[in-house]
Length: 334
Image (cartoon, rainbow, N blue to C red; front, side, top):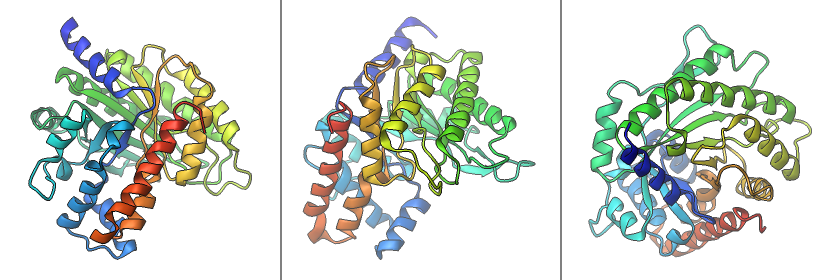
């Protein structure tokens, strides 16, 4: 890869990793979005999904707290109620357009309870099309469940290989790859176990990225925080989460990585913000950090909106409040 292309990737990364701003994850699949709608009695239609995304993406002032948005295939093609493409609106706000390019998880054959991520087939053509639609960065997620027997070394290695091959394809098209090896919150494990697994997963990832000669300064890591399992008896507090997370990242993540963003991964909105605030208190770190939450930003707004036009303003207030708090947490100021 020649110098100009690397500089282009680094330029995108620097625009994403702006202090006090985060990357909104609005890339729920149709199935995930419909499940959330169903629980609130919202019709599970493309038009309702479009209205919900308009509420988020077109909110006045969201660009004060958001540097980029990860979209889903359906969303990157949608428009506001006046027919203006969401991508055009985001560009005018100075918000970078990202896209989820993986095609979800499938069972890892021969490994009970483990998954691999689909989507490498046809990926170069998809990335090229998304680039033509305005995308400058992409995302690929792998998932690792902590249990007595998982994750196995095989599953870590296989998913790391897929993440690295995806990253190469993105960089060849001037698209910044966001690599997301999520260590799931489900389980009864303590924070020590989470530390052990997250360390193993991240080391496996960066071994594969090195093997495939991925340019780390043109890449974003989207990582889990190091957390006790959701059903753990004694869950670690935010201060401990901050310390453990920073220590694991310092051990595993090379200093040249373009940026590190954190997923919320099933935490409550308050937990995610509080834990992120404690992580940020450890700055300066070898890399810039930011939040990249989905439900931890959207949940309050979605419940407030509930599909009713009369609730849009109130829902946007709840949304902006969450963004503002995470922006403060990004500076360790909460």
